Length: 94
Image (cartoon, rainbow, N blue to C red; front, side, top):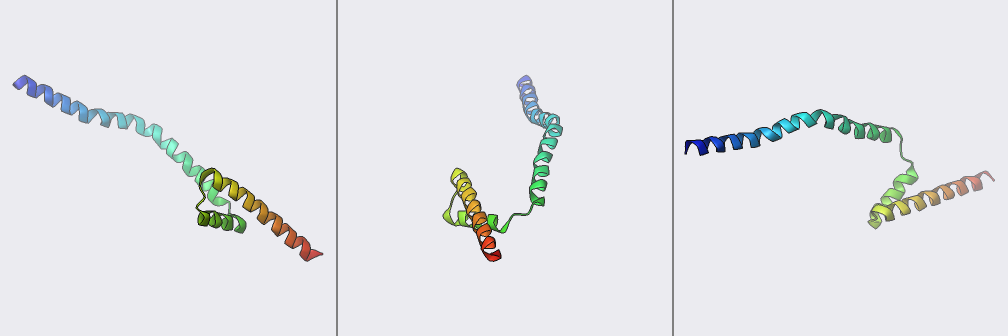
């Protein structure tokens, strides 16, 4: 009985210590990977979105578009907004 209790204690301690040791060795490798998305987010945040882009995004939300459909809609919406904006300024100058 004493021997089986010893084996049980060793098994439990190895189960508890195993993941803790594995986490310590992988933690430094995970930290730089986590920092990379933060850098790209900072770059995206520095560029302001146009009013047309924001309006097209709201329209896509209202229509419930996601994924490829949303991307296609946004592309066409911004293209239309740019054309309408260019036409209105051209008409105003003439």
